[in-house]
Length: 504
Image 1 (cartoon, rainbow, N blue to C red):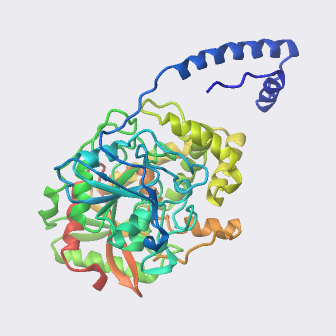
Image 2 (tube, rainbow, N blue to C red; image 1 turned 180 degrees about the vertical axis):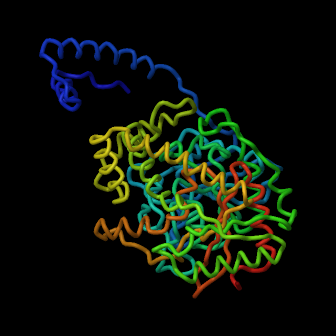
Image 3 (tube, rainbow, N blue to C red; image 1 turned 90 degrees about the horizontal axis):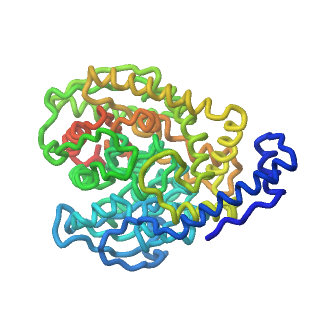
């Protein structure tokens, strides 16, 4: 496609937007210069850009049949068989619908992406197929992944299998539900503020946000490059470790991957936890939004780990309470690039999804009124902040994020794992898309106080189901040193062996 050539009014509008004072004669010359420049861009259209597609037979599949989709957890059904042998042979996997599978529709929970068919396979998809896994389809996710609940997703909200009147958590809502009900063995999720761990907590499964960069994000729809994480979700710790073993490691396309350290995650599962030092984070409990029963269940879980030979003591990281504020500084300004720069931003070297940039960059403008209220808030707030103090608060948040990371590192020099509730409350009532913005946004973000700080600090963090209260799961979060997922998984496996968490 060729870009429309500018007329004089186009140039005048842009100049006014930037507050430039340019004479008519100068404006005419700039118009000619831009016209000449666009001829160069025409040449880019003539060149063949690379795509990443793994060579496994697949068909487009079809939209999920409502009768076979009681919780709306499937967005799209297909079957793609991987290699004839490998560590994931006989394992079924759901892929969060912000992750590309070439030839299979992707909606990312949003009307702004509806109708898009990727021409790339995400690296994690290729690795799953190379390992013999069978992909059964795309799992529903929240609208552009900008919600921790499960009611903003299009075309339908995702309901909690333990109580359909409650949210499943988000944004990896469908992934969590499909694992929870046994529709798949494993699923891929994404996490920028807790979007793997929050739905894992509310549906009662295991979900691991790896260290930032351990798993390549190539071929996934980003929100903000320094917050983007992709990770495994499963019904057992062993399956989490197995899937992580397959998808972890550098791919040469993702700038998030720097000095990546991969461990033997499967070997960690049987090591036991005698001598393991646990730090029970004071600031993760008794928050304003906390339920006392959640705090109590997590403390009981710590006692059970102590009975297995671990030691535990209370620790304090006061800055943990500032984590959501720092996260906001990243998210509002950073996510505006997702809207303005074709979904992927600029200024990084790696593999861009050019067809997504073209499709989404056009369609969100055409369907802007159909975007979720969470997306509208990010757009309005991000643009306002950029106009008032462009880049200032993003820069401060990044610098403060480094300080918060150092505080976690300091604590983890004295203990092996940090423990707290994953979400301060159990699954909350399902929100309504018709709710006014204040109620809508409150429901979408009420649960992320404990999870979003580790997206900023980049430490691995895992939800471990640790009990049931009035039919709703409670989750314990284990936070480890960067690139030490093995210790997190070791502790999770030890707790899993104690007994069925549903009876705790």
